[in-house]
Length: 279
Image (cartoon, rainbow, N blue to C red):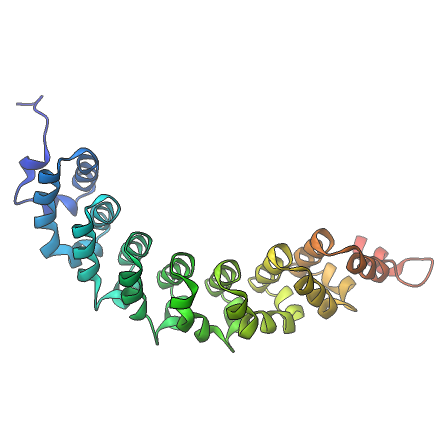
């Protein structure tokens, strides 16, 4: 019958293969939104034994995410248990990393801690990985700062190289947004402030310095400008650093702005630095 509408029950014993199909996966996701508890349980019973295959599948991962989002507490717990021992592998995999991120959003604190702890000793590897960096960002955003000290500690002494890395610079920005001031001041902010001139001229590092100028406190802005002072004109003509100088003018206090303007105007009536900047 061409007009007959398919329901979840029609897929019994074929849920896994449908989940791994583009249209099948979408069908299951849509049906789960309005499914009864009983229908949802039937689907879940088939999904769970194949959970590791589906998590790493281009279409299957969405079905797992749907259960993490909308499933019962028991289903969420069962999925979190299935992740145990596989967090690193999944974090480094294109589709698995999405499942880990979703899990970190929805599971309770204890389970969050268990999942996150599996990344201990592998933090920098994940940060530099095209998939893993998203998981580390999600840890910083979703897990309470006290539970991810091992992540922040892994950055101490590596802030310069991470800030100049295409993925690392995003992770450092998440730290600046979500971690406690103790965690930041200890080994993160000091290194950024010390290396501000170097970072300002880097294609990725300049974003980290801009972030501090925009979201940091008065003292941090003052210290950055103190580091840049004496080189304002040179930096203002630089492809990447010019963005940092612009942010300084926007966010720094009037005293700092005065220092910058003084450098730009120069000491003679000809205003040579300004002329150079306008070329």
